[in-house]
Amino acid sequence: MTRLSKASIGAVCALILMAGPMGAAPSAAEIGKTVQDLAKRAKAEPMVRIAVTWRKTLRKALTKAFKKKYGLKIKVTRVRGLASRERILNEAIAGVVGYDLVNVSGELREQYIKTGIIIPVPWAKLYPKVNTVLISPRNYFIATGFSKYGIVYNPKLVAKDLVPKSWQDCLDPRWRGKFAVLTRPRAYTALWSGWGKEKSLAFHRALRANKPVWSRGQTATATKIAAGEQALGCGLGLHAVVNVIRRDPTADLAFAWPSEVPIQVGEGLALMKGAKSPNAAVLLAGFLASPEGESHYYIQGRSSPFVKGSVASKMIKKAGAKLIWGGWKWAGKREAEASRDIVRAWGFPKAKRR
Image (cartoon, rainbow, N blue to C red):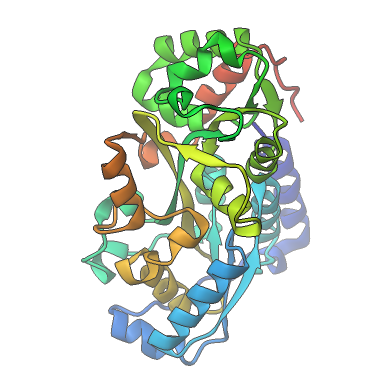
């Protein structure tokens, strides 16, 4: 797993010290005490800038809905992978704050907090109707989308009676050398939080023995499965299937819900210190976490199972599946350690220090 090294943070911090006070990030402006106050203050601020994973269709739907409700526009920048969030982190440490609201990857949340580039927000006080499970313990993050992982398959290559129903089906010798597994094991670190170390390591050693095709990129891997390069993919997200089918509705691709569904925060939003539009940013984040805003996330396959009546909650209930999520405290060091042990069980060499 790619992680931001202490050396890179140290180098940037050294530059800040050399640059003097000019390198420090400006403090955030005062935030309203109520939603009404936020909306009033937001109208006097510049257009809110947000860095998220929204694709075009979701971006259009959410910008339209937010403008309709509050009369405010959104400037959206699409970010992908850890590298983009590492760049935002480094720039903010150096005093360059390009966004008001940022979707922070789970692996980087502790770094964002420790470096002081984001500030806590009293989310529960401002939005008492939002499920508190969506708010991180110290109020730095609010979840507005979730990744749900399962088994993706090609219906032309997998007969109906052989569609996987559990993770153990990925160990079936019939799929030996014919199934894909992502080298970034986010599905499996989530499962680890429920399974524990012993069961997880036994599974991953057996998974390696079944000769998976190691792959990178959710959508890229799902596309290969649809093309028939592999019969199925174990540990892919529902959003990957949605992305492929959105491009090609005739794609030979389907998603199987296993009996245990691991989930991760797909969009954990944080308010940047030095944000030019802090009130608009907090207003937007609260809107996205509400049932009204969340109702659009199904477009990208990131509907939240913790919002009553959501697409995700209905699908998981229909599948009779059990959710597995380690919670906010799982992300960071504990998840990184689980990821390290998983890839070692897969036989990958220990990553060199950068």
